[in-house]
Image (cartoon, rainbow, N blue to C red):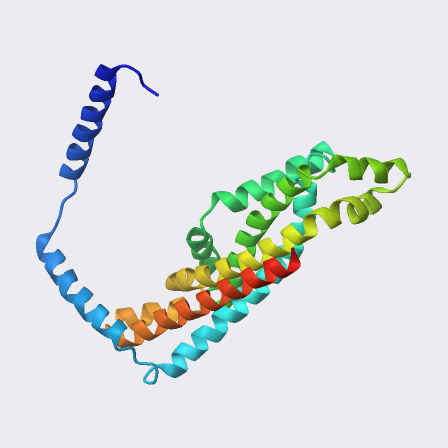
Length: 253
């Protein structure tokens, strides 16, 4: 907290001047804005009157691809992230394993899904396989980091009691670590399932398959009524996933 009134006013004026100068550097094409406003009105009209029938075959195909990518990438990503998360926990992993696993998590979290999707599309071509790899890669960083933090925050008295019995490292993980972190892991996995479906709509725009590719095609063709139908389907599935995952997390806990 800045106590000096002079410096408070000086910083406020400086921020205001910076904002004005920053806005002045934005080159606005007002003609393009007017065209965009007209298209926006058409899009809103299509959203209010969605067309589910004309492009239903494409919509259903994209929806199945997204759901398939979402489920498979979440399952595979969680399975891979469990050993990485354990290895990234300082209190249970040797130093060299800790460094490697933390490096994997850092790389996964450093790259946005859209960037990773562009990379995999360039490697493997357009389609759902690139989307599956992208979402799996993102899931590993997300689950691995949070799982490692949960393991580091466990009640150490339980771990010490298991160690005192002469238990092996695997028995320590199974009897001291797993019961404390499993409810949290299930909740995070369900949350990541929700995130992966929403991300599948985004990465599809760059060619990684799914409902996002269908949405991008509809927008490129100016078929705003079909685009509105796709968006309503995405919203509906996300809402169903949100309520379902919330119920399951409460049931698990």
